[in-house]
Image (cartoon, rainbow, N blue to C red; front, side):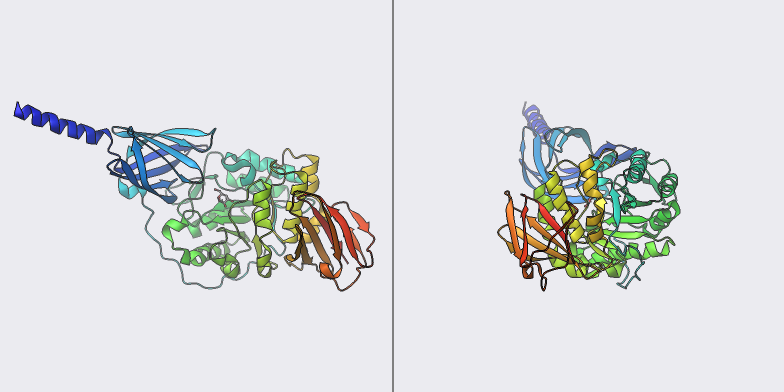
Length: 493
Ligand code: GLA
């Protein structure tokens, strides 16, 4: 009888422990287009009715979990940018629901995995700092298109070909756009020799480059100094030289190199060395390749970007297709003006014009500001279906001419008054571009003396670059009206 009781109690204990023992490492595999499998790990420690540990999202970023409460054998939590996880204990597996937003959910089964699998690869020492010679490219800010803002992970070979065709047929190429850039989500696997192989959405990268080149355009690609990209695809970690050679062999003309999971293997103090490694590899590849650094402005990249061979560097986190995001990024760039020059540019992120989240007035402000900032002009919309208004903004040659001015100066804000901001960009011909921006929700009258525009007296000529009209310069100063969230963009001689 006693013996039976002991067995029963032990059995119950074991049962209750087994009922919800989340402790350990669990792996989910998430299939993606192009035959790619992304892996996320839950490294968990159960302490009574709470969980601690971390989630290693897409093998690329460690995000900590602290005191997540367990209820009815379930744990629910958010760890990053709004992604929500629900884990249900089911014996030898966890049933996982991932919610990306209200509409997008994904189900997966987590199975136990060795803890070592969740760890980043061994650290490969980086070279000592040295100056990479300038590659002579991007003497004016690069212009083109990038897939990310509109297509995200939905890009494929056909979309890139279509973008190239549309760039020519729409007149964008004639207005100066040249680079057709694939962002993340083209990567597949590595072959037995370690060569990067695109996923099945990109059957023949060389043929794609030939197609783009045949239209007089150039092709760009994307990778990371880390083992994984921000989307969880393969990065160039440990394969930098090899990847640079592969890109050159395919005919790639531009690389966006995105820090992402490099933070798992290198301390922030090694940002510069990490970027230098690929800068050297690109120059050894034997092909001129524009080098675009993407690390969101960490470590004051503008101070060392040129030394690693960079032609442009992101200065901020990701832009979103709304007024708040665009204005917060764009109007905060003046402090970096001194770092822009022919061959290397501050990059406040790609354009959102035509993606639908702002009004035409706001998109004209976005374009005017980016051109005054001498920013790279990477259209981020679907070039196959642009409204005439979107096309007119993107191809306003008088505005593009400010961006592409060979003096290569970036505008600075010289005056802020009652919701209006005056930004001035010096031009090669001795003239200036002046933007009067209205950041308020109501139309504003703009009345400024010429001195307030930074001029010594009455100018010879004033041209409005959105109405394409020459204005009669008044003796004392300038007066006009600026719509809410709008801009008056002037070229002054
Ligand atoms: C980061 C970059 C974006 C884009 C994505 C792709 O968020 O900042 O511009 O390249 O990665 O995953």
